Image 1 (cartoon, rainbow, N blue to C red):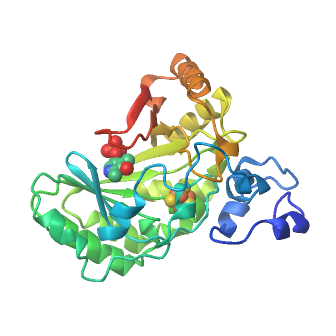
Image 2: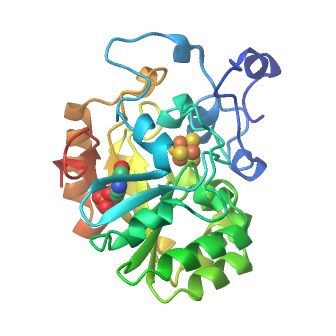
Length: 300
Ligand SMILES: *Cc1c(COP(=O)(O)O)cnc(C)c1O
Ligand code: SF4
């Protein structure tokens, strides 16, 4: 692995959230640089064992609701469908590190869709996980067809990091399946750093260009908590046809305190972005607070 000794990788904690990183993502790391921002997102660290007050396994109080039906509605007009618990990469800062049902899958007949059919207030269905692009194209196509056959559903949205870590996952079959849908498709990607984009990723994003492409990032200590880096990310994303959407404050997930960036620092970063960039390249700074009717806007 780039920049990290065999010993370090071997010392990485195994357990419930092991090291998991696809080769195309490794190929973008700078060799010999232990501070590489891609490496830091995926390499387990001994800090993960630190117990820090305020950091809990399920800060969003989601696991019960999700495990129940694979369907999560917190906000008006849109529901989040947990298509699978699997991801192609294990991002060390992710809340998913504690999810007990990591390989949970929607059954072939998509029982969660019944609840959507019965609720005409649902305008948008968000495929999430895990990562919905972990599903096979045939399975995904069938799921999308079933969702878009529901009259009151106007949009489908896909939250995915797969085009980032394995750009070849953007197959012709996937593009065809998305094209065949009568509704608009929104794809929310997850890039945290401009170094995550290369020619292969650009090609994947070009193939996805017919759809609305947005990005959400997490502001992470030692990875992207820097105005130059975040401004560079926005510029790089726009060049690839992607608009910045959200910049999330990290959730207070146990084992991730070393990635913490506080509200004061994040707000200052956001102000710098606002001073430097056109408004459409400044993501909204948000945090997730249980019980609110939307993500909590920290700075717009
Ligand atoms: C984040 C989230 C959404 C999407 O929120 P938007 O502000 O529409 O992007 C929807 N449902 C749940 C449960 C969420 O956590
Ligand atoms: S859900 Fe997203 S952030 Fe979390 S491990 Fe999967 S790809 Fe990474």
